[in-house]
Amino acid sequence: MNSDRESVEQAKQIFDRILDNRKYAGIIKDDNHLALLLGLADCGGADRILDIGTGTGYLAFALAERFPGACVCGIDIAKRIVEKNNAAALEKGLHNLTFEAFDGLTYPFPEESFDLIVTRYAIHHFPNAADAVAQMNRLLRTGGRVLVSDPLRNETDDSGIIDDFMRVKQDGHIRFYIAEELEGIFAENGFMKEKQIITEMRFPFPQKAAYIELYDKIGDKDRQLYDMVNENGVVWVKHIAVGNTVFVKQ
Ligand SMILES: C[S@@+](CC[C@H](N)C(=O)[O-])C[C@H]1O[C@@H](n2cnc3c(N)ncnc32)[C@H](O)[C@@H]1O
Image (cartoon, rainbow, N blue to C red; front, top):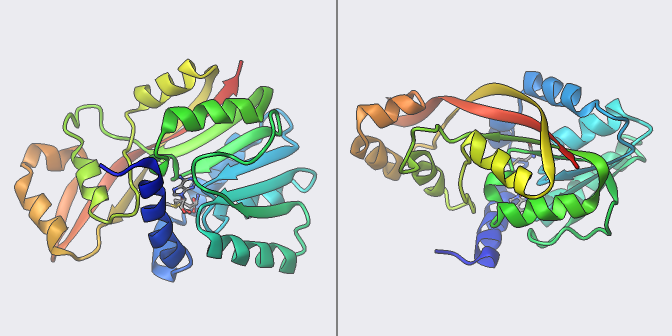
């Protein structure tokens, strides 16, 4: 089992390399999903917005453009992409958008610095989700919101087969959460659920023997949880639910 720091280091090594790779960016880009998140983010006049695990800034750039009166900051452990994003923001004349690299564990901002925190497809990499959510509480003003979007573990996936597949990549994947588990973590840290929209996504695992071995090892019942198929040597997850949830700080 990796320590928190080792997990972050593992994630950093991979994400610094792949984030601006066109194929990877294509897999996680989804214009309909982006539009949905922008709609969910349009709540309560947020002037100061933080995007945690911003990556290429897919959501942060869109937020800065949609809400020109707001200051948007994207943070990530992947230093190279942060530098690239800052150059791109300057080039686009987006003076309300900045990016910062950080250590992946401690958010480097004072109390009540933000009105809205967003995080897309990243919380499953946070080594300690409860600690991250407690820090989000510290960073938000009372009444501030968190919009968290992440694939959900199927509630009958008792052994976490989806996480076994995800960990093959060795990109610091910690785990996907069952919807109620995530809601519990937020509730325990002073948040109330305001809204939730469930979407879905599908993705392939790269052509690799380890994925085929796992696929062959699990039974039909487990494959059906995520509609997994082997298409000519590539294992696909054809259906995984994504929770897009807004929590309000009490
Ligand atoms: C799947 S990508 C999603 C990127 C972006 N949010 C998007 O929707 O395109 C996951 C991101 O989480 C970042 N990440 C991984 N571990 C992290 C951590 N402990 N804290 C913050 N970000 C982290 C990665 O560097 C990567 O940019």
